[in-house]
Amino acid sequence: MSEQQNFVDNGDGTVLDKKTGLVWAQKDSFQILQDWLTFQEALQFIDDMNKKDYLGFHDWRMPEKEEAEGLHTPETSIKARSNLDIFIASAFSPGGGTGSWSLPFDQQAAFYFSYQSGISQTFDQDFSQGVVRMVRLFPD
Image (cartoon, rainbow, N blue to C red; front, side):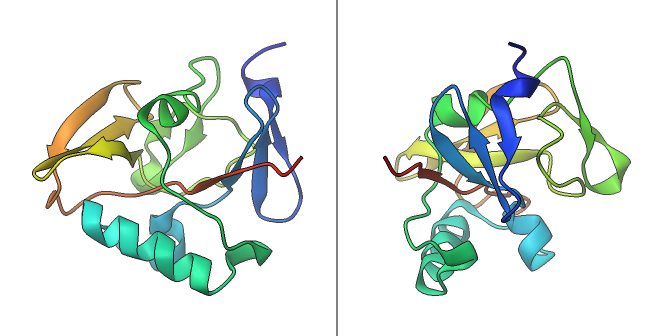
């Protein structure tokens, strides 16, 4: 099974990763807010989405570095904002950011994974052009 086939559009604004059992929001924070986020703003955004029961759920969280990396599918791409190619499954909504904040973090820096390059980098938490792709565990 290709990486692309691991991701299923659930038809409710979420995408299931059959390989890991994780459920991802189909849209990232940029698509929802039409704005960039620092790392701390991304944490607050997720908290706000949980308070609003975004898509009927209140257990969204920031992905771990390895989870964010697991979305990278080199054999397929969709168009991000500014018509840039990002390498994630077509089950995700086009028009979002090119990466995602992820955990872990320390007082100064946090990981940011690029769906263009497939590389995780450490950025200052105050990097102001970040995006987050929310995730949750699929209930058993």
